[in-house]
Image (cartoon, rainbow, N blue to C red):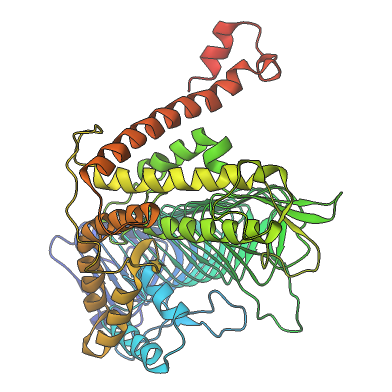
Length: 589
């Protein structure tokens, strides 16, 4: 009957059909090698080679489908090639993995990618290269994963249509790939959308990632809930919650630690300062470069740095979080305003604290993510920033004058050291106000954590921690979105020989995540001890902290409202509307 329907096979004995097989739904097909067909699938005008087709699939006009297992409920339509070369002699797949030269164009951080891999796994393998035995163990575990879960796999409920070529790509459940040019040598997480002219080569995608509109992606890892479009990304490690969907921007050899937004025309890693492509850029959470900005390798940015539009001519090391950075070309100097977000952009600060959680549309949520802007990592950056401001201020004055910042400090020119690789000045703006703002941010962080399960009143129960019995964990590592204390990370590496699979690593990360809430509370308490310069918090101090916290919360609400109201009170922003009713109908939020 299949022959009569225009089907051909190199060897019909190698073609098998499952229960409920509907022969009338298959016509004009060619079968090569071992092909397994499940019941209730429809296949026409296609060539299948060494494939397993699940139940309820629809395959139409696929020039070649080779070396793949297609799970239930998939639709493949109008495709050139969907092929995997990672196939052993029996057609069942091999341990071959796509290789991704992430974070550095020279390939010194190259990793293999496999089905089930998360951005945290990729970062552990690519980043911590100091111990060769650790790197080799990651390699062995990855090879085992690749052998057990071959790359030629299309998950359940996927839709792939109108594409030229898909080669050596594992596709996660519920993924949509449409109108793409070429996708090769990569792993796609569950629930992703890839459409409209995308070219992607050697990559790893987390869950709920969107690639769109002419994106070119090479040798990169893209974290969960991220969107890339109309741009070029090469050899980069991107953590969850990244937005880069404007024209003409590119990201080269960069590690961006999530909750970030790259504006149109921004060229990050725009050129090299040596004869080889060995530079890297590392940006903490909340990285936000302005329109048409350019940065050089190698540079590093603290969390939530906002960079004004400029061509930054030198390498940067911005150690002040929540800062506004600008290149003052007229005065030929770099200017940095610490705590800018807190002082002048409270609406965005408050909005950011919820929007990334609202955008988290993942189903399984395997990669743990810290969504809060104020967390142990940013708190430690703030503590370090306050010390730097104090040092730079004392250098601008006579250090013997005072141990604290005088009120008039913001009027004095303070030169910051070590933030730019040049001989020109780096000026700190509004240092006194920023120092005070950083202190308020620490109180807000700590009290938010410690009173989260209680009413925000002076009656909130005081936590009982012994500040003398343990030291504050001052180093936190962002592992693909999950914050891990340095001691815990060291123990993970020490225990690595005991792990026989990546699932064992994932279990350890799950355990650390489960313990993170208590770690965070301890850290918040210790942050208050550092701020108050004491070993324990008295009842009266706790009442004062609650009262101060309430004041800060009210200020945040007022400033956020005031920041937003500026958009409505600005006569220029309202001049395109003929009436208040028209404006309200258009601008609903």
